[in-house]
Amino acid sequence: MITVNFETEVNKNQIREILDEIIADPMGGWATLPNNFDAEELAKIKQAAVEIKETSEVLVCIGIGGSYLGHRAIIEALRPKGVEIVYAGNSLSQRELLNAINEVGDKDFSINVISKSGTTLEPALAFNVFKQKLIEKYGEAEAVKRIYATTDANKGTLHDEAVEKGYTRFVVPDNIGGRYSVLTAVGLLPLAAAGIDIDQLLAGAKEMMDDTTSMAQYASMRHILSGRGYDTEVFASFEPATMYFNEWLKQLFGESEGKNRQGIFPASVIYSTDLHSLGQFMQDGRRNLWETIIDFPTDEMNMKIVEAVKKAHGAGGIPVLTINVPTFDEKGFGELIYFFEMSCAISAKLAGVNPFDQPGVEAYKLELKKLLN
Ligand code: PA5
Image (cartoon, rainbow, N blue to C red; front, top):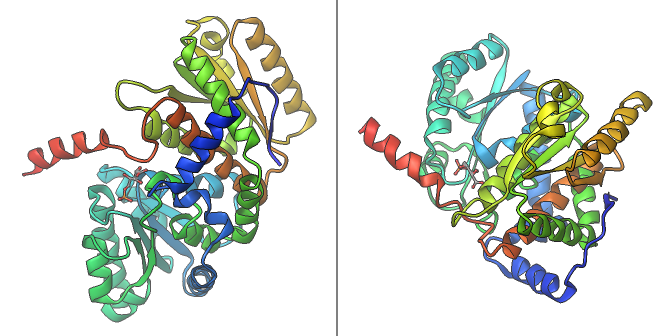
């Protein structure tokens, strides 16, 4: 189980109240999910993954933000041996879209289009393009069988189209928001198709759920540091394959905490690569940041550099927190996901902001709509 190696004066009653609030929140469904995952839904996900493996060499995963970062983080880290995943719909760049189309080439493929709202522009455009490709290659009837839509249970453009055409549908539960949804069908279907053991992932999350002490400690520490003027948290990993896990973390914390002119700015580094780019700043630059080392089990050589960095940065005046991850596998990542989701929700509550909304994301969408008429 994940441990953290720092102590804080946690106000246990306050944390208890916050935990109760999170669980009772209309958007807090993820907090108890590992304990009461719908067995039928899980079986349906596994069945669809088998189907995808039988019919396709590639699964095109279309989604943005919380609808894509979590599963990409795990797939990039663990490099499973199942169906190849090609990502699309996470930008409006035509160049990226063409790259994705070229990656698929003439391989057999299916699509998993993921959008809770079912109206987000980036994935909607990419979906239209790949759907056309699917129809051209397989014809309309077969194309329908190769589209898996993960979206709201009742509403949204994607929901309506999926019902009308008869795509296989998976539901993003009403009580779980995008960035907390990796352990729902949003993440589990692409993960299972890619060859990840999703039972182990859920088992890891469940283990963390049973003891939230370390999450309360970490969240309290963040709160204390932020109160002392540290406004930037740098997530540091020494495993290059976890770059997308850092991206998931930045989205989780950034969208959950950055509101009402508040929040801790989430940044990230991969060492030792970034010791040769941001290392100077970390050692010697402005002292408004702290470092949270995600310490994955690693080889002896890499362990030495973890120690060296902790010592050097500590001496340079950076508070260094360490999160010890016991295993670099599905279980370890299941633990990490729950650990960070819960820590993030507690932190946001300690800061007095709602961890589960993202009103600021709408602003660019409105401007874009105006520009696109
Ligand atoms: O965490 C969130 O809610 C967001 O990052 C969403 O996941 C992202 O905006 C994509 O939204 P949707 O799944 O509705 O397309």
